[in-house]
Image (cartoon, rainbow, N blue to C red):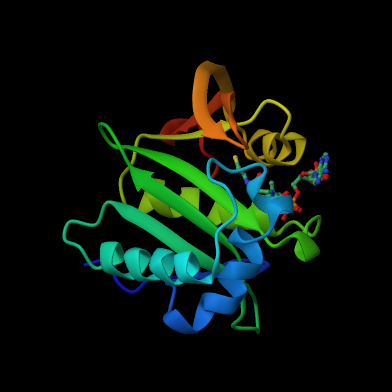
Length: 180
Ligand SMILES: CC(C)(COP(=O)(O)OP(=O)(O)OC[C@H]1O[C@@H](n2cnc3c(N)ncnc32)[C@H](O)[C@@H]1OP(=O)(O)O)[C@@H](O)C(=O)NCCC(=O)NCCS
């Protein structure tokens, strides 16, 4: 049973979502500055509640296939971002993350992603973690490159977002390449 998860790292804590997080979540997934880089358009309050409810429900499924965690600063409980790995394929997972715009540039995404990928290899026994990133998303590409992900290629018309199809660049890291 991998519920509830709470992992403390250098800068952040990764923890399960709770309904009280709705305002914090809305400040992330309701902000065009953030969602312009994601695979979905900005969401309203009702959609934020639905997102949290769905996340809590899927977190308790056995076996668990989604690890969608809130990111908080150490010593604080408000959610400033999220990191997610969805299991897909053979011992494989897809990584995603976002940080509230007012907290960008402080190393939170790098720390959160590093922590979740370590968890995925060590605790979930994954062999491969991938991340599909918009070609212009320099900050997100910097995150995965810093963590040692390799560029695999381009996924054509991968997501429909901001009213148009957008390709993604696929990055991945394998368990034996990961520095624990
Ligand atoms: C991508 C994102 C999560 C990065 O969050 P963050 O907490 O600011 O990231 P970090 O502070 O860990 O910085 C990561 C790297 O990106 C670089 N970076 C940050 N903003 C940048 C920008 N606008 N342009 C270029 N590089 C940038 C940082 O310098 C850092 O690299 P460095 O350590 O080599 O200097 C954040 O910008 C975000 O939420 N964007 C919108 C959602 C998104 O794109 N999610 C990922 C989808 S694939």
